[in-house]
Length: 113
Image (spheres, helix red, strand yellow):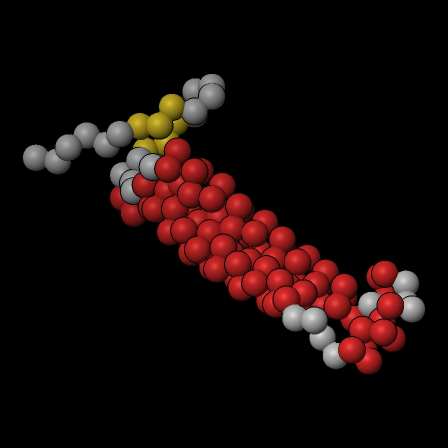
């Protein structure tokens, strides 16, 4: 004997049956969002950390004395060390934004499941 199909009540008199190939679509959507969110959060955090570490490496050393004296006469934003610091920091913040979007997907996936 076949089980009766579940019926999804929509607004008004329209209704849809939840059997067949789309019966588990809602649960699969939750699993897919959670998996993709975990990948995005992990990869975004890893790349954000790597870029932030690269930014700090440019500030760690004293540098060549000749280059330091040349850079001292330049405006602050035109200095080589500042540019080598700012670019990876901006990229790290973008990767961390992707990681936060991944966390949002994980939370939405948990709510969908």
